[in-house]
Amino acid sequence: MDTKQSIDQLEVLKNGVVFYRTVTLTERSDAQTSSTYHRSILVPGQSLDGIPQEVQNVAQTAWTAEVLALWVERMSNPAAYHNI
Image (cartoon, rainbow, N blue to C red; front, side, top):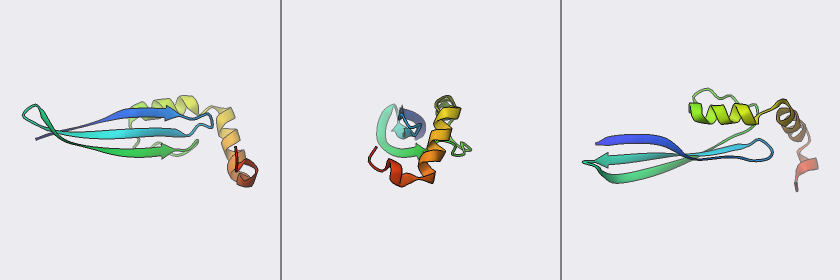
């Protein structure tokens, strides 16, 4: 039995939040026997330790100084951004 993992969805929102989905495929004799999915969310400035390199590259590109500053501002006053 062979198991393969890959990122099959990757999205960055305007506020810098990164969503990604990992799919794990299990195959036996060239036939897929099962697949499982795991969704993950990263917020600007979050540690990227242990995160797949493909996702790290996207997050590091998206998390500009401007995005990080706005994220910190939003988190320090969440009520001001409640309905945005």
